[in-house]
Image (cartoon, rainbow, N blue to C red; front, side):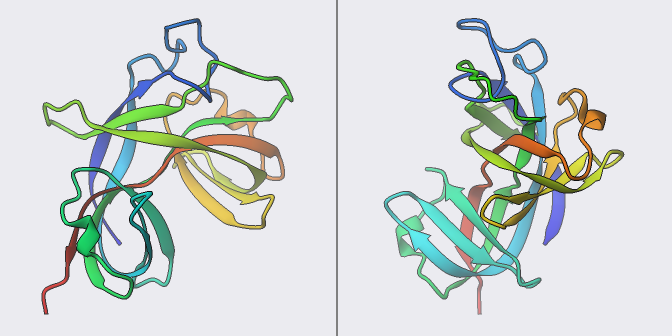
Length: 192
């Protein structure tokens, strides 16, 4: 996979993730910028759900990723399982990493908008997904965390710079992570 640019995102406080006051964003996430990587990869379509507009691709490194395909992805209905495609997508980024405290937090971050750097655009809305797991590895300078979920899946995330107290999280800790879903921006068949 080739990392080609840094993408900017505007956080919008909605249903789940960061405590907020009614109708306002949390102090450290209000109308700020969340960085995500813009990736271009040639990959094989492993699965596709036309109704939910999701696609699972397997890259040349053997790793699979499931992407949400926004409305900007043209001709999504023409993509088939087994197709070789070039996919441009915004990678997942953790916007919350904290130790679960058992408390309910009703005003949490649920959605962010992502837009390419330098573009005058409202961006693309991206839902966030909650994950509970155990920290397998953490790189503080690179701001990455790898967790093993309760189902045994290993997931790695780049952590947004505004996530406070990252250094309080240690290998072996149980954590709650809320991260953006990877979003497909463009999918096109590889020309033969």
